[in-house]
Image (cartoon, rainbow, N blue to C red; front, side, top):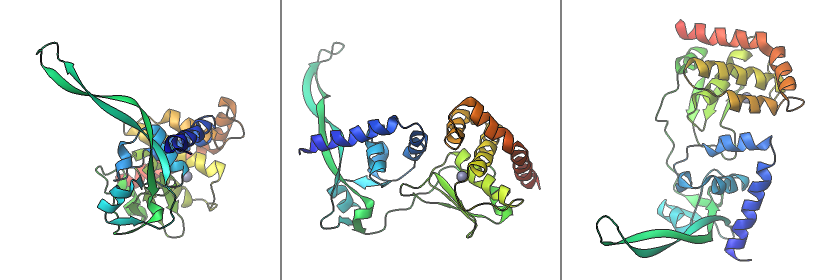
Length: 261
Ligand SMILES: [Zn+2]
């Protein structure tokens, strides 16, 4: 099979993903992972191909070498589509001069390798450019907050046992979501799984806190909660939200009061 065919096959998987309404919001969220590798410049389609292959950092063979890492023997690459560029001399109507112009003439499959299939120098760690609002609340709760790229993991996580919030992206609402889990755990024993009610408490709280700080994540939140509701209908989502509303209120008050202390 040619590399272009392989890349097209990968893209076919992405199209399939787009028809899965529950998976898509989650995958799209991961696309915003701030990794320091070259894939941050890739197209959405190529990024999704990468995520479907179970990695948040894929690079070409030479790009890994430049980063001081080596692709392990026998590792299979995955294929992304890159535009094939041609140069042409075109006359600039304003200046009358001929100028070199680059234009795409098609696509070609390019093999890249997963971070997991390489070894060598550790990759530079990702540092947030912005500090999220309410970070002080985490501190007052005694929670450690860490930024690190996750591999096919979620945008963030809160670990009840280690009392650690891990974030792989800078969206304040991701941090708010994990902070809400923590606040929730102070007045109810949480299940150590992705529980529909717990997730609704966290995301609804995050959505409201985000609004307070000028970010609108309503649409994302709806889809997130819908993925945990019995049906993906406004009625089912509404019912789930109503069920946990008093807990959401508790979480928000607790977070904001802790912030003011
Ligand atoms: Zn959660």
